[in-house]
Length: 137
Image (cartoon, rainbow, N blue to C red; front, side):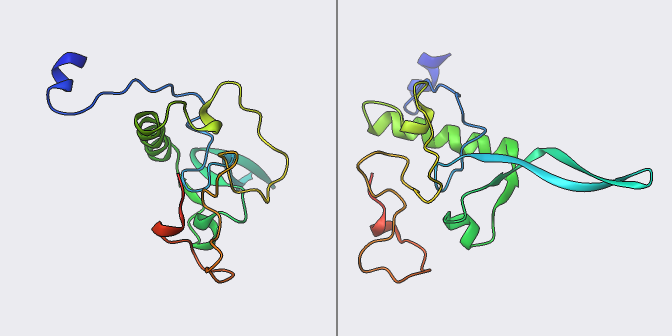
């Protein structure tokens, strides 16, 4: 089947490791959305298994008020991002490597060591979203 698909487009085998728990925009950890539910006479906080939320306050999605996304659609977009990175880089992006250990510093929005991925450029004003020219792969 791969040979048939290769006739029309490039085919990449992608490892799905950590694709459902990484934010598409900042490559930081996400968590399941929590919601308050009334059970009997008590209000309980439950996890919503169909949605994820980025916990990075510096994420461009958070600044655009788009932190909660459907889990499956988000994971498929992250798989696509991982596949694209596989085509353009010799190794997978750091958050998708099985040996990756996340940093405890949540202010760091760079998931690629030594790069300025999703970091504001020197000409960018505080609070302004990065443009395509401000992203470095």
